[in-house]
Image (cartoon, rainbow, N blue to C red; front, side, top):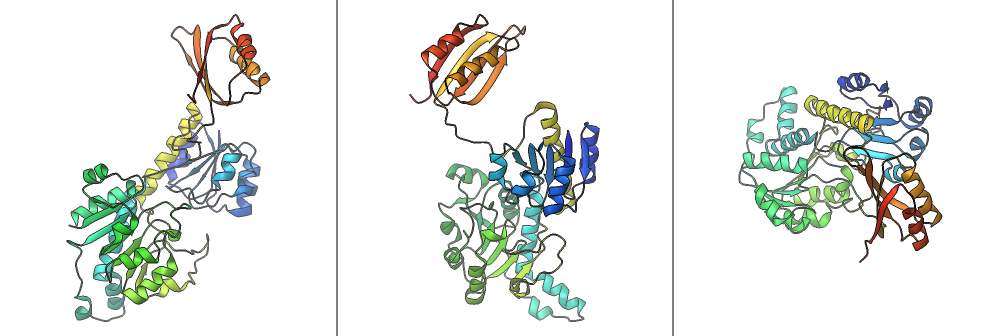
Length: 402
């Protein structure tokens, strides 16, 4: 199996994949047209990226490409819709950087309260300002509004409890029972979570529903002078609304992500928010610890080797959760070459499409049972032709719509 790694990953990834029998090409500098050229030249079955964008032109450049792995949690840098249309699996590595992101979140929280970065800056400039910096509020007993209770959010909750924070959490999947188990207050809506909170921390994937979710209404619901921390995706927060809240409500922010960020290889940050004195920014480094890098690398190896040996795709994000199948055809048959091919040919003649299919072999290898999900009901004549085969023991057709 040919694998192209187009980003910087842990060194052991390429070594482990080669040991498993893969032919690995690594070039962390690839992007845009250079990535397309490399895909056409190497023609890999698997492409691994981290921050490199994979657009339609890259997906069509390699005829053999069947799996794209994002060495991270989100997949917003990959054109998932085009991949799905070409039958290319898209997989990710969820949760492997959760601890790293949670640690940075609390780094931002403590810095916002104690102004550690400003302390360090003044000291390096030869200034001693104990009086100015000795006025922190403290975080113990404060209320943290948490948006997103995935693996990162849960790591933040654990640390919040250790710091004595009260957590009010919202997530689409969070139930009152699950909230109680996590030791947090269940918020019915994001606005409920934010009302009167001293800190807002955002841990949401970027989707059409979450883009701009943290808007003026949520920011105005926070306590005056509250802290806003975003280590998820810059576009989840309405940056204009945040800058207004900073100006009018004394909000201060710790941001690892921004609405606009430099491209690969660009070391300039010309955006005004970076110089706002109420904003403490880091350089999109939430997942950038050696522990997280190693954990993500291990998961990439696990995904590729499972695909190589079993044909199964772990953590796949673009398989349909719904089916248009209306009927289930069960065929008990002799386990022999060509039996299922004959069944499928009869279905094709009837104009019935197969949505899903699995075939289980009985002990001894003499017989098998195929379960075939169909887009419609085969004709009586078509079923009769299948039943007429000497290698078919029996068939049954079940309506899934009844």
